[in-house]
Length: 241
Image (cartoon, rainbow, N blue to C red; front, side, top):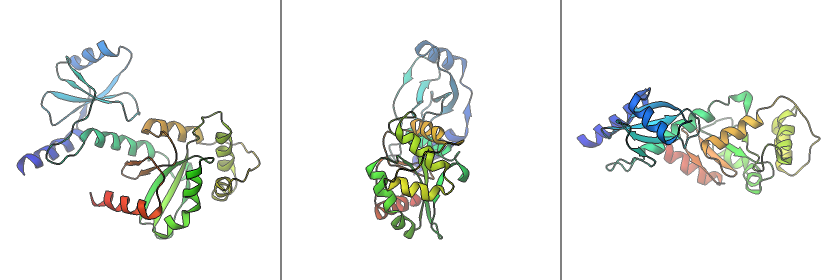
């Protein structure tokens, strides 16, 4: 129990004690990636090994290096006692930070009156399973699950789907326009200042590869469609951890 508690304490401390990398680590890393820049070097539960975080919001830019700068490690650290993946915890924290930057004026919300859980969904208007999820919105809301949409047009920022996303965003009633678009209705094209490109780029940073992708408020990523009941089970499991 003492070992377990110590590991947990150290892993927590590693999250809050990010520091500038030492000269040895900077010089060692520069030999591998001359143009990349380390933002912080964070203590890990392993003596002599730092977690290095690049000057990037990409959640996959989490690596490890020995204090003397001689060895670089591209992999994960897992606590034996708890089976907890500390590397994934770091990525989850970064994912949470990226997604939470979009406030209510930068997303489209479908919330129940009594919201017990909240998720963010990266969606593509022309994606079949995205349309299926949206068609079941009442099921999600009836279970107390609120959904915030961010756009992730899979075919890119020059695609017809991107244009449809902008049109939905620029509508007077975004929720109604979103529902019509998800039902396959082609709306009259509109243009305005919009966050669709920012949505898309944030999805790339956090590891979105398809749609729909569901992100919890803690930063966990569920990279697939889920029914309302299945999502509720996962959210309750996450809440209990």
